Image (tube, rainbow, N blue to C red):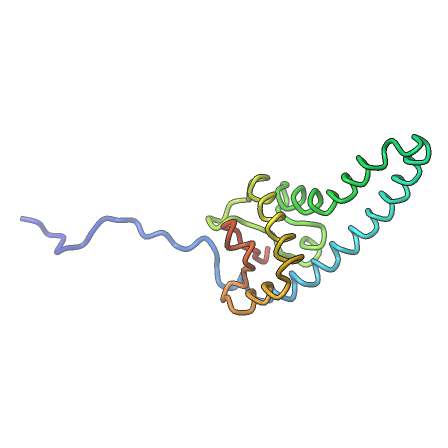
Length: 154
């Protein structure tokens, strides 16, 4: 005779994030994002001066490869920092937020590369789509949802 009266022994897992980790994330993301673009502006200016100097020295032979590398700089910046050990860009760290995958683990470089690509496509072609952040209780942007990632407070 069974005594469990229809109960199961299944383990109920708690969600990996506390709702408090989403408080103030939108404003922190925005300010951190602006800080990251200011840092990128400085890197871009330095890369631009270096590109011009190297193009002159090589009589233009490095112009095209350097232009491609220069255009790749923002992609490399966001992918490297969000896929790294801190799971946050310098601007995100400054604002106390970090990127996690939906299970709570640090995202992989592949995941952050795809996320960065989707972010750049959505921001360049569909800028109003970023408003999705305000319609979502966990303040996830479309590129976060498509890559199963979330930005939370540390």
